[in-house]
Image (cartoon, rainbow, N blue to C red; front, side):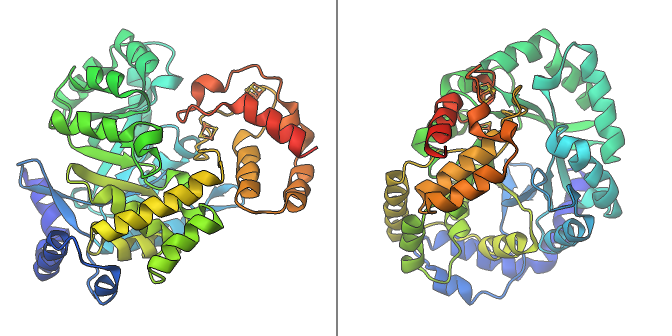
Length: 414
Ligand code: SF4
Ligand code: SF4
């Protein structure tokens, strides 16, 4: 562990060693229920060692892709207060990317995180392979990221959104070689990638380089649906720590359906629905950090309760989760995370909004109410404007059959 990392850890952990011991005890006691946790008065999130380096990282990471908004812009007053709350609780891992909020997420880092000592937080950003046009973009984009974030260096730097096609593109542009050069120059500490694809492709990329951290989509719905369980196994077998994105599938696992929510609420009325999904992901031993894209103060407050300390799900709670999942699957909801990677649609269709409406109907919203919202949308944004060109299909990490659903919505909402 270098000096900076020592400071980072001691700032957030050593002063609260007794609480950390309690967290450790809770992790061992897998059968502990949430009622015991509710009596816990600590305020520091559970940390996990990073390999054998002596460095630890918070199990809860702050995803900066869904920052609070006001009048279409990042609401700095609330977002900055949320960051302050996170930092005070030792939640000092921040994940941004070139494309989040059209660049405003990285600028937010530059305007807000820089108020804290650089050694007191971990920062990850990513090279947007999908947006690159030539090898020259490596340098241009990276320079812009350093300027936006004013961070001086990135603790982790990823190839963003790899799949078979993007990996090929990154290789043809020499992006990994560029990243290694930046690492040698001290602009990057550790290398990784974020991934949306098949486990077979993941294994191929994972074996290509001794990566320091790999980010995958992992949650209890996608464990089988998007084969994230197999992805987790691949990385664990290869000894690569895992960063989790979309642990709540972009809020899908908070909204769920009334029937699925009722299962969780009956089992533990005190626990938030979100806490179940986060505890599922964070309870897996090879998880280094679970990212939560928090967009309101109550999100960080609830998440800090969940992670201070993190109590993995008991066997009984896993059964409850399986029941809730079965209830959710019955609704036939579309697994859209609202990530907007499919946008813009050349015809102007607001794909995630249409899918969200469809899901609300599947979740019990009367069709009449949904139609009112649908009719209030601009004509080009409605599903009926879809011409089935298929341009969105390749872009959706969830492999949703978007044109089919647009046709379904256009018919049902007519
Ligand atoms: S298939 Fe439909 S929704 Fe998708 S990009 Fe084409 S027009 Fe837009
Ligand atoms: S349809 Fe796919 S790409 Fe578009 S917002 Fe939903 S999950 Fe994201």
